[in-house]
Amino acid sequence: MGVSFADIQEAAARIRPHVHRTPVMTSRCADEAGGIQTFFKCENLQRGGAFKIRGAANFLLSIPAADIGRGVVAFSSGNHAQAVDIAAVIRGTKATLVMPYDAPQSKVDATLSYGGQIVRFDRLKEDREAIGRCIAEQTGATLVPPFDHEWIIAGQGTAAVELLEETGPLDALAVCVGGGGLLSGCAVAAKALDPSIRVFGIEPALANDWALSVEAGHPIEIPPPATIADGLRPTRPGKITFPIVQKLVERIILVSEEEIIEAMKFLLLRMKILVEPSGAVAAAAVLKRKLPPEIRSVGVVLSGGNVDWAALKEL
Amino acid sequence: MGVSFADIQEAAARIRPHVHRTPVMTSRCADEAGGIQTFFKCENLQRGGAFKIRGAANFLLSIPAADIGRGVVAFSSGNHAQAVDIAAVIRGTKATLVMPYDAPQSKVDATLSYGGQIVRFDRLKEDREAIGRCIAEQTGATLVPPFDHEWIIAGQGTAAVELLEETGPLDALAVCVGGGGLLSGCAVAAKALDPSIRVFGIEPALANDWALSVEAGHPIEIPPPATIADGLRPTRPGKITFPIVQKLVERIILVSEEEIIEAMKFLLLRMKILVEPSGAVAAAAVLKRKLPPEIRSVGVVLSGGNVDWAALKEL
Figure 1 (tube, each protein chain N blue to C red):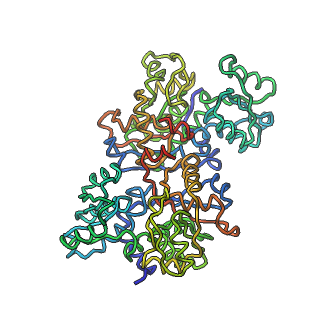
Figure 2: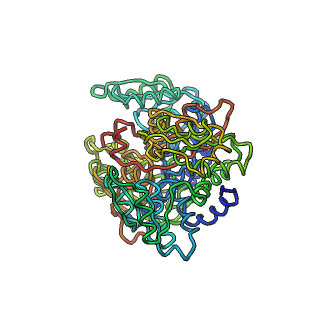
Figure 3: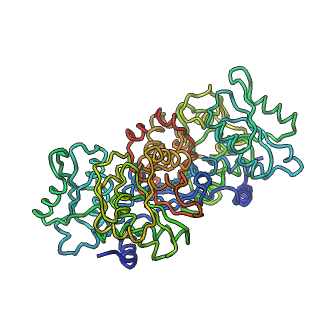
């Protein structure tokens, strides 16, 4: 149990040939808006449009050869699905994705274009986790969890390694938190590289399960949140991710829906890069000056960029 | 008269401390769509949001010390205005921008934020060139032309130098053409670095003054074009840019308004970067496979990224 820096370094070596080393962007406008020197790790420019390929590739490349031939299965209609799909091509196996009937057609098309097989289900009547587990049991496919697994966490942590290799020491790191895979992995990496760095988790105020859980000292479940940041809708912290965050993350910071949209627009119109709402959450906290004022430099992970035209128009 | 590669190298050294060395992006999706290995020079990530700062900075830094104190003047409500404004700060002088009363407020605000002074005029009744020249004569300010000047052309050519330094030899270069400053500067640079490179100018079919002029063998004026690519609306080739293009550019390629919008959406949704319509014109030609089929690799200059929210929504 738990994830060490060595796990993350091994993950980095394992996935290096298959994922992009995404650029780190800076912007005078952003520095002025946030009052902090800010370094943006552009995981919106990652393969599959999000950081998720890091964990998925590490996971699939860690599956024993004896098992990989039976394929993998994941339940997701979001970035994790696409990542598992790409990772299946990398590992030379087949992916089955369990998606609701009402998943956006663009996600379905993207999945099919990589060769993944889709199993549809009725979101109101059926339990996708149960369907996923059933497929795994019947076919011998390996279930790829979206966040709560050491291999996934170690993979996501490679984003912070690359960021800090490029920037050198920073006062702080700001990372969004949904299931906690990215935040816990990045926290382990950052603290190993520099024990004095301060790590902050950012989540929508509408999806405040992490803030409540950290305050309570144990994972707390919330009702399905209505936040626009669809990647951050898991309703409770993971069993593995929670204790890591509890130990290494200084504080969970909340941002409003308006602040998320404003940050998305800032990144788009001023910095010319497209991030999805979840991808703008950590940036929103920095641009709105929610970090302690003595912090002079911060790394921000822009976690993904998958927005479709219709969603963009609605903003 | 004319611009040499030495002029461009001097410009590069002169402006280096003041402009961004913008990234060169690649994308598997784009390579597949266009059927060519494509390298995008991201001038949408340049200071002021467009390549224009290269020429403006080179121009202002070339003005003799005896003259610079009287300031500079430019007539533009677009990217050239913002570039002159930033260049004035770099050179430590004052810029006056002649803009129509109906210029978008965002452009006016951006100009004022850099400290530029704005003179408004009535687009239907007054001639902004005449106003600009009048201000220059009365105040002794130096007029900064948008494209048809050796210093401007040499500055714009530095974009191609950076691109080719990063990629090594390419089969072709695709550059949008409005007044011809960017295209002529890039053509001089590219041909000097590699005489076998093939250079293509791309313009909207609705603003086909260059295609007509090259065919006729002399500059031809067209009525004000209604293209969405507002940066490419000059109605005739420049006196200095035309002969350079005539000599070094293989062909002018036309793209439709739909192709421009489609390329913008591709760059935004697939590659996660925002370009303005003019900035997508060269990419549209490549994505729509309008280059000769034997070309295997191409550099594309994404010339700018200044779009406001309202314009984006209208697409």
